[in-house]
Image 1 (cartoon, rainbow, N blue to C red):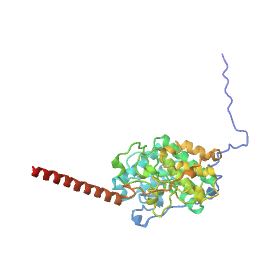
Image 2: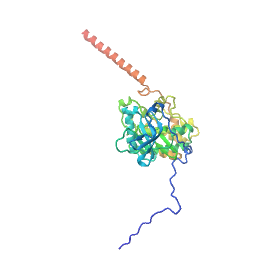
Image 3: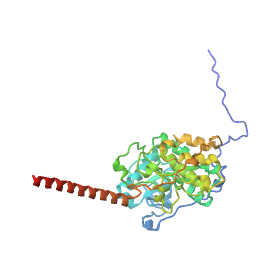
Image 4: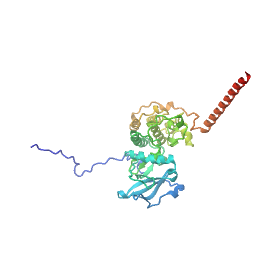
Length: 379
């Protein structure tokens, strides 16, 4: 009878603890002492705040309010079904619940959040059964958003900015592999946690790529944050992975220079400059930057989507090894923005000219008809 020999079992040496991986931002100077900050509670929504002790669906016990926005209120709660584990609960405002567009955005965030699974993407918890009211259950994050760090230390050291945006690009790349475009990337949607990690948040505007847009779409309202929009997003044109690359490029620009591209007191005016021109070269605002940092940033901020990085992976590769990036001279080919008439950027002027054109057409039609009528009577 043959003898069965067991394979040796691999065990760690005695008295040695297996090393745990270091947190991704452990070596980033600006992320070493992250404060735990709650957001601001808008006084206008105070009457909608759930009190401490309130129980949602006999499972989530509200402990305190964390933050509020124009869309929702976020609470710290305890999950009674899982040993009082702490979670974040997001409840839409009443105005959002009654607004079809706003409520669809809220529902879409949960739908997409449950599809995503990556260490740098905010985790959502699936809830079975009917809810007593609309709400989302998510992992509770402790830390502060990237915009707070950018305000306190501007500009950030080049290596710090590269590392943070590299992690964000990895998170967005995971969304792209699931067929989703974030469409609202900005520093306030990036959380730096106290355990030196990162989470990308807010998937309410996420969508599949929009390869073709009708003329009617170009005349409708714009959704997003103007300081970080790509030119095609400003014009309600086709949107794909490269739209998110532009937004991350705008975040990188801000971290490296201390100001957003196309800075203007009116952020929408700055947004409408993007389809026709380029931002100020980063090294003009921060001469300490390396030529490679400027090259990477301007490559991501190219006006035409086909001139940007072809994928988030290609963008991240340059962020992780900037010393290998050849300098092609993007900064020498920058063009200042020029005035452009558009429905989104200049609706009054565009409407006035369209009205004038219609009026002129009616006048010409009247003249032609009057002329034909005169010829008819002359016969």
